[in-house]
Amino acid sequence: MALTPSTMLPLGTVAADFDLTDTAGNRVALADFRTAPALVVMFLCNHCPYVKHLRQALAQLTRDYQARGVALVGINANDAQQYPADGPEKMREEVERAGYTFPYLYDDTQAVARRYRAACTPDFFVFDRSRRLVYRGQFDASRPGNGLPVTGNDLRAALEAVLSGQPVSELQVASLGCNIKWKLGMAPDYSKAH
Image (cartoon, rainbow, N blue to C red):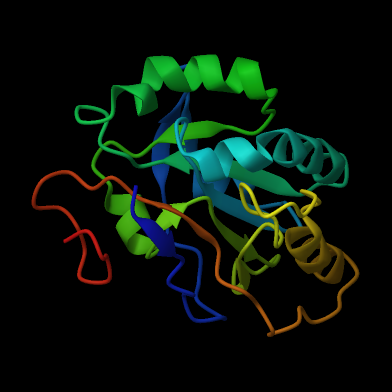
């Protein structure tokens, strides 16, 4: 497992388009969330211990903010041939096991992950109503084995700022987790795995 930080995509970046399939076989696109006051795009996978560490708190955060109109979407871009635990069938099982209520999409070509410069799982991106990036970074400071409680405080603070019309603090800490499992020859220039 290569421990990888997020790339910290420049603030103000416009949300990259996507149109992917969820675990129920439905197509889900960026445009489907156009009326939401905020959009959270999360790069996740099923097997990463860093994602497993926060999935219960992530499921709760999702329920809390969906009730306030925030759109959240998870995207798994891992190579399912090399990592079958991250394939679409296992994603359906993960949605049930974790209690996820957001669409969990599979990025088979890995093109969406590249557009977002996603580097690790988990990797979080928050966009405001105009779909400009206002937060990218960690869920919170908790990591497997560091003893800190999983709260989602960093992500929650960003969402609270957006919902209240306040600027999001630019003091943001990179997320840390397993590197995205790129297909052979597909690792982008920003990836340590290429």
